[in-house]
Image (tube, rainbow, N blue to C red; front, side):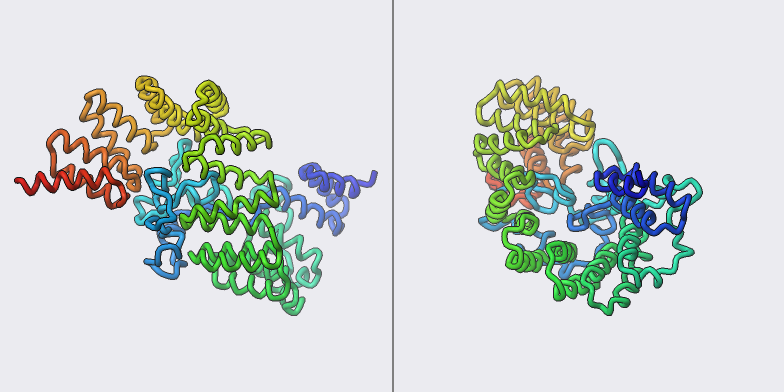
Amino acid sequence: MDPLFMATSLFRRRRFEDCVTICTDILKKNPLDQAAWFLKARALTEQTYVDETEMEEEGIAELVMGDTGIADVARPGTSLKRPSGTSSRATSQGVRPLSQSGRPLSGFVRPGTQSARPKTMEQAIMAPRTASTARPVTSSSGRYVRLGTASMLTEVDGPFIDMSKMDLSKYAKRPTLAKALFEYLFYHENNVRSALELASLATEACEFEDWWWKTQLGKCYYRLGLYRDAEAQFRSALRQFQSIDTYLLLGKVCIKIDQPLSALDLYAEGLGKFPNDTSLLTGIARIHEGLNDLDKALVFYRDVLKSNSINVEAIACIATHHFYNDQPEIALRFYRRLLQLGVCNAELYANLGLSCFYAQQYDMALNCFNKALALASDENAADIWYNIGHVALGIGDSKLAYYAFKLTLACNSDHAEAYNNLGVLEWRRGHGEQALACFRSSARLAPHFYEPHYNMATASEKIGNLHDSYHYAKKSAEVFPGHLDTTELMKQLKQHFAAL
């Protein structure tokens, strides 16, 4: 069989490593074989390809020192950094947990949804750590890793393409080879500057009439942090040819510069060209969720399911919405649907267990948590034990809850919720100092939680330390202004102070 035909067959079957091996043997015999060179470049690109339309995790530099926002203090409802948390459409923090930025925790983990937007460098360094690593999240963690070493592994004598000896202007005039070379440089080598130079030369060679090259220019500018230049390129590409990817990339730029309303208008325009497209509908739902407008987000997630009934993100987010709206039976139906689709992980079984518990199906709840523990990894084991502690509190077994929260902290020593709940149990046992220490640890790790502040205020008031109690109650009121218990406690403390 012809080796090139065999390599092409392997490429179509996504067996990229075998394809690269055969192409390498062909190029050793004939280094000028353009077909083998093209196929090898495509295979290496596919091995490290990343969907650029999806949002990526923001690093410390982007969060703390980013200057892409339009206004430092934006109006509520117009910025992802300041969601409309005080409006009537927002979900109460007492019902659904919020992140440090004020966003409700979503039902589907996406880059950036669970991370906070710290205001100081100290918070930025502390916040993004996980149970398995103490290294803060940066923009190069897992996504933009330098992949030049990957090509070194495929070639014993050096890299597959030596950029120092390559004349990009010659390749720019040959569209087929230029596109393969660009994607190789951009995705495999992560050599954005050389990819940008090639895209600029190719755009000039086609007399600025090829929308594809303008889109690639926008990708390069976005990767380099030049968001306004990227926006100009994407809009120019849309004027020549409307494509779903370009709408998504332009919406990504708008979100990056904190213009969610512009992104919503753009996605709506895209839906006018491509009705019922699930990626555009999902983008709109995500923005509404980020703005704390959960009712509108739910409407668009349901529209996604009308077009694609097996969309995992939409099913998970709708299930979470019903769970936090005191409808565990409906949430259980959606989580079971995810199980039928083949999703099998610890998080899903934990959600199933909680839904069964609140739907009073206690036997199924315990079985689901056993399965979740069997599938748990070092990163999510803490959350599984934390939920088991909640179930133990619900059935009145405070001893099991105490040990579950202890195990939570053994798996993740930075689990703020576990510290808070453990402090409550220590207070019930009469260990006041240990309880206050747990509350302080929880407040230090998660200053956006109102529970530890309120618990410290209540504990201080009961032991007669009224000054500290008022101080902590004031902090709780700042985090959650609508908390009635905090308001009542502050009224009582003011009456005490007035009597003195």
